[in-house]
Image (cartoon, rainbow, N blue to C red; front, side, top):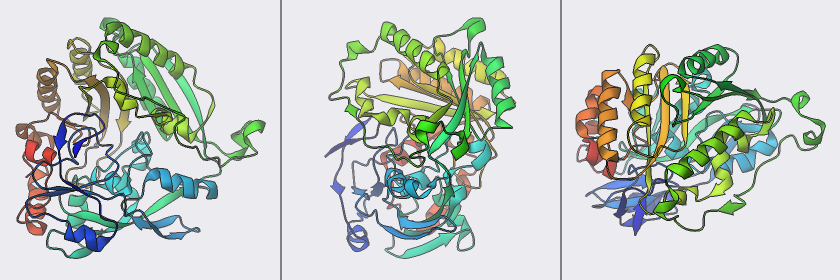
Length: 441
């Protein structure tokens, strides 16, 4: 079938298998090339493969054990965060780390080592994973954790599914009084004020994220809204919410029914959309449900169709904290790049974890959507060079354009990862369109 990531670019003809148990999963591995796929929410091509097989893992989604005293959950890797929320939020438990959508699998969260709004406080997803069972290319299954083959553990965390297929995971959830959050919106006039505000509020708030007006340039560059928050207690809730403090959200009420025509994406609609986003961000309610706090875009089904038939890519990079001037230069390149930049977020990341290919390290990370259009590839290559010069890197889970020459400068532990890959998968069975493109396989 013709498959794509969430950005609908690239679209590739793939041979797909959808086993519903581990035995069938092992039998479906193709020595010519195999990659696991969850719910398809990686933006580019890390779960695509033209020559080989794509293994859909969402049929392996059972909850195997849960300790209500500690929050320790053991589940199959095809379980989604949406299912975890539906099952455990009414019991007072939430995922400790979540990306901007709940429609992702646990296995996908580990393979991408996803991060959220609280990386400076809670680290990446892997910080709350105790261990996992991995199906190797040889057909052997091994349990991997920080004591049992820690090198393979950290090569698999953020390893884009290239060391083996995740089968079973033990992780920890967070105890909460409510499924609501206290939040505050701070309007900022420029980049200096924004970065200063993040540094100030990160000391007292575990969650923070900023939206920047991508059309603002000159002295207004970086103008936007910083939103900070924390978990709401029962006492924080207004009376009308206290009757159901552990409310769980449902499925999207509306969906984009088809891919919008390319004419819908133009400078006028860009200005209108960003003006609307700015008003929404600035007028954020003081108490908000987790759906609005973590997953505002999940309220609209298939929102990716809004970018049209060509699709889009999300470009996300991180540069060190001391490179604020370089960050300014990158934002200026984006604003003046001749493209149509849409949704964006800026965050401060915390200390780097041990994962060889994990994206986050302590610095400023910025993510922005670009519709696929002529000239975009050239702009992204220029941004890649500027990111490397700043000592930064690009997030593989979002990427669709990075070249092999950029991997070693961006990921200095690449050599260690290659050694472990060669040990557990010497014939290169596990590979993807992404891994072939950037030279990992």
